Structure formats: C-alpha cells, structure tokens
Image 1 (cartoon, rainbow, N blue to C red):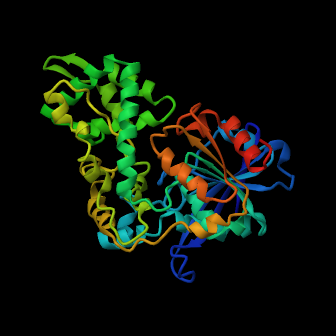
Image 2: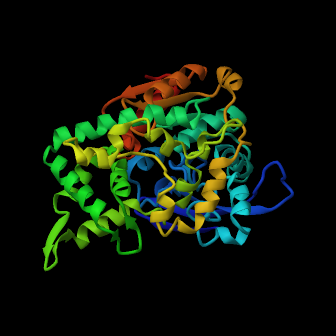
Image 3: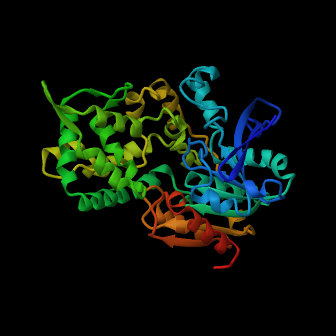
Length: 433
C-alpha cells in the first residue's frame, strides 16, 4: 500500500516495485525498488506527465529533498516526479558489506553486482513505467551517472521516453576505463592548480598534513585509516562549485598542539572521515570502474594503474622536493578497500569485478544516430568528473541532441543552479532556445 504525506508545497508518496534481478531471466530472482513520487500540492489531483530522476554515482540513492528546492521546484511546475533509488542504493535492496554476504562468498557477490550497471537500471525503469504512467512514455532527467543511464535508455528503450535531459553525464560510447582516467588526471591537475592559485597558503598546509601522515599511523574515529593517498583523495570535492572553498576550510585548522606535540585535530579527523567513508554509498567503490566495461578487457584497477603514468601525483616524491602535493579526484583504488571499514570485507569481491572479462556493451551507436527523442544536455566546461571532449564527441553521435556548454557551473550545476539549468534544457529539447 502506498503512503502519501506532505511537506511544504509538495505531496509525497512512497512507491515500491518488484523487478527481476536479471532482466534476461524475468521469471527468476527478484529485488525490490523504492521511489518517492513528488507532486506540487496545488496540482496533486491533476493528470500530469511524468519525469523520472536518475541520480549520479553510481551508488547514490535519489535526493531526500525537503520541500521544493533546486531543480525539483521547476520540474513540479509541469510534472509529477519520480525520485528513483536505483537498484542497490537507498531503500532499493541495498548492496553493502552487511547485505552482500547474503549472496554467499566473494565470487557470488561479484556475479550479483554485474547486474547493477546502467543497462539493468534502464530495464528497471521500463519494468515499472507501465505501473506509474499507465504505459505512456515519460521524461528522464539524468545527473552525472544518471546521464550515462539516460544514454543507455536512448540506446535500449527510446520508446519509453518523451524527453531526455542530461546534466554533466554524457559518457564516451567506447572508451575503456584506461582512456577515461588518462583524460581525467590532467583535468584533476588543473583543478588542483586552480585551488592553489586561489588559496596559495594551502600548498604548505597540504604538504604538512601529508608529511605527518607519512610518519604517523592515523586512524579516524570510526576506523578509517588515513594514509597519504587517502588524504590526497579528498580532492574529489574540487569538482563541485563550492569544492575548493570546502577543501580550504578543511585544511586551515588541521592541527592542534597537544602534550605530545602537534596532532591532527578531532574536528579535522571527523570532517575527513565524512568525506572519505563509503559507508553510505559502497556501490560507488565496487562498480565505479565496471560502468566503463563494455568488452573483453578487464578494468583491472584502471585508476591505480594509470595514476603511475602521472608522477606528479606521487606524494613521497613531491614531499622530497619542493613540489605542491597533488590531490586526486573521482577515482577508486584498491587501497581504499584496506582503509575504509565499510569496504574492507568487500576487497576480494572488488578484485573479482576488476578482473572480469565478460562485460557487454551499454550503448548502441546505430540507435543513437537514429534518435527521435527530444534531447538536451548540459556540458560543463572542464568538468572534473566527466571529460568534456568525450561528452561532446558523444553528443555529436546522438541525432537531434542539443547541448549547452557552460562554465557558469561545475559538475553539480543541477543542484547549484537547478531551476535555470532545467529551464534551459527543456527549452533546448523543445527547440524553444
């Protein structure tokens, strides 16, 4: 039974659905999906078209909004919105260190997780769409990885879509994970350089923290082992509009003087723990490189291997000289499964996923070239998370897709400038701009 309740200006309804684990075997095992329906209070009884929101990640559940903030307020002017927790995230049969042992050992867990990529998410959407819309196509808004899923949707089931809107999420159609990270590390260098240009005092602060970590065994309050490499990975925040400022405030008061000398403060450690832990989104770490697997080549810890091609990211070498410490960005490394207690029990599962050679294609260039779904995409100039060159190359292959390339926002533009971003994309998709 669906339960409805109210927040300021919006009526919300909890929706639950049953879908096959493996859509190639529809009569086999099932899992449960959760989604939250949102409709403007003054339109609650109107027959409105639907928009389904696909969150970024992979591994994050849909936003838990309060009221009508960000892009949601704009969407509710004309749509009923379905905020979908993609399989394995949020309340949709979560996959984590506590639940995955129900599958068996690491091999069984890895086999299970092969069903948590964009193709399965699209087929989930198509399974539940008739129950939600009565069979009518719906609009989709895909943010980041949700955009990857949207391109897969246009490839696998375009008949289910009335409009496709993408923010910061046009994937390369054929790049191996190695190609993705070879393009990523230079972008990360630029973001770090821009941060140090804004906050030059952070050069010495970051070096001091990294040097401390090279000579001290630091374990954060909930068991996360803070190594130099883990500290460098805090650079993931630099891809957001406020990320540079957040990193600066984290670094500025990192140390306190104690009877035993200077130590990393409890406040710093608590903030670092909240940024580094994958407890709330372990699928991000487990399947992040798998979302680029489309052929017989294993991903094989791509980000870790490719990092070695960029020696400026070697902290020990930087500290031995006078180079600034390079932070890293959106990359997953095997040492994370040793440092993070939320990931530690899943290390062997992650190794098995990294070694797989049976990935299947996620996108269909021929269908994309014949696309008839009105579509628009926001492409953020020098996006740290999704390569702009790859995004624009893909945009040229999708028939009728209109792009808005902007440096007004970073990767989180749909949050920071939600109403304007959504307005612009709707106008482009409708050929009104």
